[in-house]
Structures are given as C-alpha cells and as structure tokens.
View 1 (cartoon, chains in turn orange, yellow, red, blue):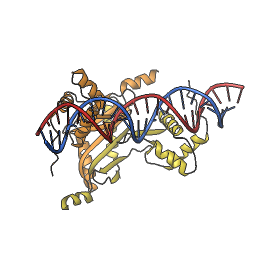
View 2: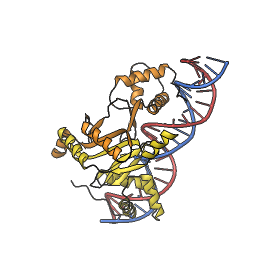
View 3: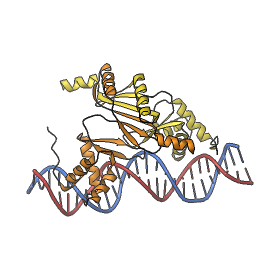
View 4: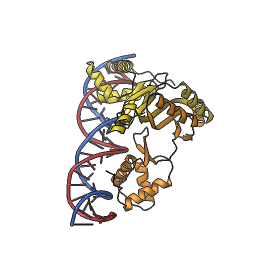
Length: 135
Length: 135
DNA sequence: TTAATTGCAAATCCTTTGCAGATTC
DNA sequence: GAATCTGCAAAGGATTTGCAATTAA
C-alpha cells in the first residue's frame, strides 16, 4: 500500500517552485501573493491544499506564528533552532550540535526514538532592548 | 505614566483564581469551561479580554498549539520541555538545566535578552516502537 | 458620579469543505 | 475514461470589536 504521488499540475509545480526560492517560513497567504507576483495564478484554496499535502508528506515544515497563521518552509535535512525577538519578530537561525546530542540523549533515556525536535528561544534583540531603555 | 491597574471585578478574580489552580497551558475556551464548572459565569469575550490584558502585563505566558488556539498559563520561573510520542501522543516532561544554560548563552551571543524558550522533542515511545515492529 | 468593565451579537481572520467542472494519467 | 485536482462560494473555529448596560472606585 504505497501512497500515490500527486499528479503534476501547473499549480503544484508553481507552489513547489516558490517554496524552493524561499528559505524562511512563509504563510499560505504570502505564498499565494508570491505566486501572483510571478504571474502564476493559483487559488488560495489550492495553495492551502498543496501545502497541507506537502506537510503531511513530510516535505515542508509547519509552525504557527503569534498571529494564528501557519507558516511553511521546505524541509531541510538539518534541524533548525531559532532565536526570535518578542518585539520586532527578527529571527536568527542558530546552530546547536550540543543540543542535537542532548535531545537525542533525552529521548533515549526515556525509551523514545527521536524523530525531530524544535527549539525556539524567545527574547528581545539588542535594538529593541535599546528602544525600551530610551523610551 | 504608569499603567493603571485593572479594577477588581468578580470576573477578574475568578479568572485569576482558575489560573492559579492550573499549571499547564490552557486555551481561553478551557478556562471559560473551568470557570463555568466552578459556578463562575464569565462570558467568553471577557475571558479573552482578561487573558489578553494579563499577557500584555506579562502575567501569563502565551503560546500557540497546532490547532491554532492560544494557550495561556500563569508565568512560572521554570521553563518546561517535552518529549512527545508521534504515534500515541504520550508526553513526558523532562528537565534540562544544561539546555537552560545553552539557550541563555545562545541568546547572549546574539545580543538577545532571553525571555523564554520552548523545546519539544518529537519521537516514538517504546510501546509504539514495539507495535510498529510486530504489527 | 464617571471612567472602566462586561456581555451580547456581529464582524474578522485564517483555514477547511462541498461540489461541479477541468485535468492528468 | 476515470480518478484527481481546481476554484468558487460557503462553512468553520478562534478571537476581536461595537456598543449599550453595568459596576468599581
């Protein structure tokens, strides 16, 4: 019982192409706009559907932002960790080989097989900290 | 210019009381139900408003679950980390003093002030792994 | 008294669904 | 030709807002 691969359609090709051209997390609506900008008309409904399929197939990562939107990004092999500014939303990608080892150890200690992990550090960036101090 | 403290109302007292009695993250709707269960009728709108105020005042932490809901919890000093089974959803709380140090160092290195962090390890628990092997 | 707070209903926003017509295989 | 995929319009679910009535200070 193999999952059939989706049919190659103009819409799927276009969405796939946009996903390849961006490496930050983007909302479905952002992707819809990007498609429109390049002249590829794809309905928002379809964008949502393709994104949902891709997420289920494990081809894209999904996360939720504070505004209640889902953000999508093509999966990369490495796990990613982010540092996010609570004020301006600035995001810094950080590496964490030490943490990779730690998460794995934690899983093993508890009898789990690790599949993936997500680490998000919420803080205030230097600029925003400065703004807060001065007013 | 001091922010005036909110008036003491039956509703605010009730919400505050529920928040104190729970230490896990709960949705606004959950809190609304809990209030109703104790016999404290507070409109859902008001629950949302009080929660939003509390979050802005830094009295409660907010995060988003995958269903798109906001979850609230009275701020605690300790950060929590979870190990989640991808198959059965079993959740194990783990401690990570080493990681506390790491997240803090990462923030500092990047000029950020750390506010909080979330770590979620997704894996497969021993039971589910066994099930996968046998059937 | 009087400015803040509440509750209801209606409005928003993001996302999902039903369904008929267009497409891929 | 048959099973998928699309797009539209409508439905859903969480959260917010307008506004008149209520209430704490």
